[in-house]
Length: 84
Image (cartoon, rainbow, N blue to C red; front, top):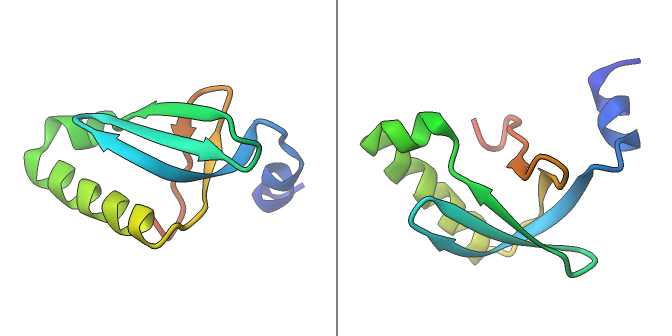
């Protein structure tokens, strides 16, 4: 089974919208109204320039009300081409 089918059948993966960005935390709300708090990835926390770019991308995603994939069990945003 390929990764795409694994993702589609994984109930831990949900769609969420960014509601708030504070320091190194991202607050998201799922389609069912659950709030998920995600820490910035380590890579972005350590590199100031990477953090600024990542933050701008997150702000653009929030501004346009885009839904992004989040693992609600591990509280992590899933990185695919749109976030690379």
